[in-house]
Amino acid sequence: MYADVLVVGTGIAGLSYAVRLAKKSPDAKIIMISKRDLLESNTKYAQGGIAVVSNFFNDSYEEHVRDTMVASAYTSKEHVVDFVVREGPACVKELIEWGAQFDTKGAALHLGKEGGHSTKRIVHHKDQSGLHIQNALITKARSLDNITFFENHSLVDLITDHHIPHLNKGRCYGAYVISKKDEEIVKITAQLTVLSTGGAGQVYAHTTNPTAATGDGLGAAYRAKVHVENLHFVQFHPTALFPKIDGNTFLISEAIRGAGAILRNHTGEAFMEQYDNRRDLAPRDIVSRAIHTEMKKHSLEHVYLDATQIEKEKLEQEFPTILSNCLKLGIDIAKAYIPVLPAAHYICGGIDVNEHSQSNLTGLYAIGECSHTGLHGANRLASNSLLEALVFAARAAEHSSVTLSNPLLSSDFFEEIPDWKGTENVSNQKTDRIRKLRAALQQIMSLYVGIIKSGESLQKAETELHEIYMATKELYQLNKLTPQLTTLRNLVSVAYLMIKQAQKYPVNKGVYFNEDYV
Ligand SMILES: Cc1cc2nc3c(=O)[nH]c(=O)nc-3n(C[C@H](O)[C@H](O)[C@H](O)COP(=O)(O)OP(=O)(O)OC[C@H]3O[C@@H](n4cnc5c(N)ncnc54)[C@H](O)[C@@H]3O)c2cc1C
Image 1: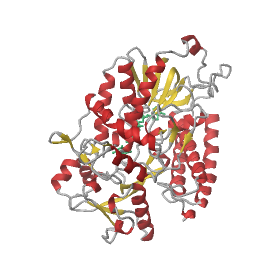
Image 2: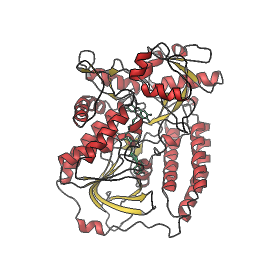
Image 3: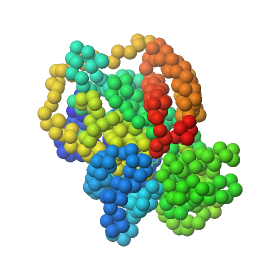
Image 4: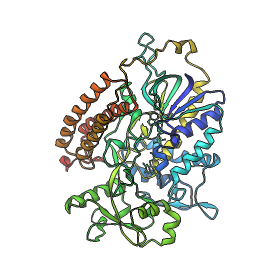
């Protein structure tokens, strides 16, 4: 298969990129692939919304920039923060033109407040902002003739000079992709390739991310020698619901603390006052560490979030999903405390990109959560990621459109690219073994590379991960490739990078906390 542009991933980043490019370059043939169905993504689960300046009476670009810099402990790149904050409102306006609807109060947008924000600025659709945005974008993208979708197709590897060394052009030529149904590996060649594969929370045992968030784009980029930075900055969300629902960890949005909910320990004490004068609305790293400390100090499995002082009507109107999911566990949040604990939530680092979202490999862009733009630094400000995805997708689409107006490679050239060469062995999935290795990896990362790390814990993680790496390598060499095996391979690469980058980081900043440095 050939495309002018191959987009790997159909979350907010991939879809908004494709829609903008399809409109800007109607002759460009765009192929989009997604690991599961088009909807399944981190975007689908986003509750709070998009941080963007919209009320200029109570807010300003300067304040949003300052809040972002403060949350990141001044490690964000200020010029990136500045253009993202300033270009955000136009991107949200465009999203509304494409069909997204956000809650309003009179003629203005209704704004939520989240931790680390000095004022109300979160544009949202009840507590299902991501699901709503994702559905609107899918509808819009489906209406455009030059976008073709392949669902249940998973990236295996990027095509680079490694596969065709005699060409030696130092660029990306598309990707090898495996279909879930028949496990066939397909070659998709492209002038431009875009990674928008989202997060990697599944590296941990407790995560708010869905099962498909396994850092596949990061793994493939790393194998292709693309720069991947700052993976040791893993943000833990302070409040995930304690018991899992159907095996998945459900997030209790920060917006509910913005509306007045408070954290309490087992004795009912509102403990956040002891840790930070912003109390329950301190940035996430501070709240997560405070909860972790309380749990350790009193040997607790979880703490509580008390939303009982919020009016029932407000809960019903603004937090219907949280209300109904807690009710599934018999918790009426208007009357009872919600058991919560921190869970891996967001990877602040990723594939290093410039201001057009280009990676160091020519022809390869990265956008959204899998990228490292410099916006988040050592800690992401709440609800800045949907904003980042929109702004960088728009920039990448503009840049791609210009690049495509001068095609770089002829179609004859792409015919020289070989099909995937893997083992000829018949499929011997060893699914059970792969599942066990994945669970063991998640335990190692949660135990040793969690909210609080140490030199010793990182060393233990490295040693134990090495065994999983060797076992995965053997499976890869002896068996036909399956989607499960490619995923495991990526999880191992991402875990390895997280550990190695953590070992090299010399200070406690943002979400990174090593107890040896205290
Ligand atoms: C529970 C939860 C709540 C959140 N709330 C907010 C919020 O309120 N505000 C905010 O700003 N951010 C929030 N975030 C973070 C935000 O949702 C994500 O950072 C953002 O949605 C990422 O968008 P994306 O397009 O980069 O990736 P995703 O939306 O994760 O999309 C990734 C896409 O890549 C595809 N993919 C992955 N691997 C492969 C592969 N191997 N082959 C093919 N396709 C692949 C997936 O199928 C999917 O289509 C939240 C995250 C979670 C998990």
